[in-house]
Image (cartoon, rainbow, N blue to C red; front, side):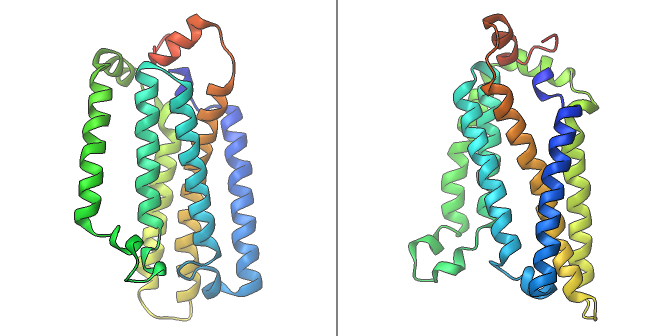
Length: 218
């Protein structure tokens, strides 16, 4: 389970990523204004898509570089990133007559995601014992980035709620909603990069086998 432990090196990576994203976001707002920085398909939303796509690619890399339970988990991560990309992607930008616009319909999404979920469940089901053992070994060091993402998204939703009441601060809170969301995606991308980096490293076969089983003793 050390594969999913987020300690000092990850914290330093995370601080670097979040610093870069926030400097970019507030610098953009300083140049083009609060409203222009956070408009639909604006610069911040474009960076959100880029960050999620990077984490999506990291998931694919991780799945290809791993085996057994870890591979199933990395495919689940990849699917989650694809779902988040689908959530953020603006299908209306291609026009209502485009085939891309049709992908936003619920029937199309369900016809795609139901088989995906069933396949992922089957992959995880092949390693039930290893999975249950890994779940029992979960500690705060394994999940604190997920908790951080949840806290940031709550703050983003609060900013969105405040922005619905017209005032002189509305544009600022709209910007904060998007910027906080970008921070949450930055945490997620940092996790994806950490996974890819750990799987890129060459380790002895015994260590790789324990890692692929998410052995708590590994």
